[in-house]
Length: 111
Image (cartoon, rainbow, N blue to C red; front, top):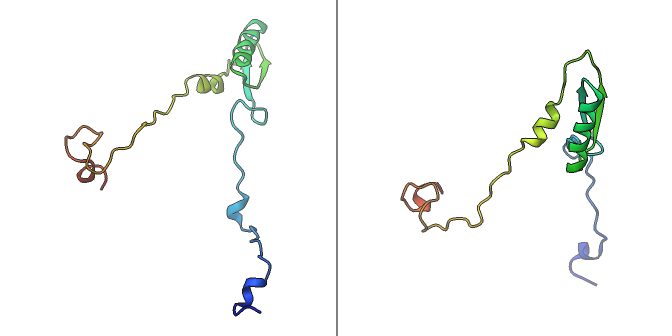
């Protein structure tokens, strides 16, 4: 028999019933759950945009409407997406600051 009676009890798993754990992420643009919704004026333009989407493996729904304005803002957003630059090495406390001030990192940007 143990001096600690709680050691022999089975572990209880927490229940995550709060609203914090029920957040729904929006679907990623260009994925199967969140395809690009585009409007073009003619069939030739539709085939051109469909080829661009197929090349990048994006899912899209293209409607042809000769009277409506062309709406390809989702496509231009994905094409112009900038790549986030990441540093390969973080500065140590006594290394020069990467901002270029000439001070040590700990006296400049680490504060």
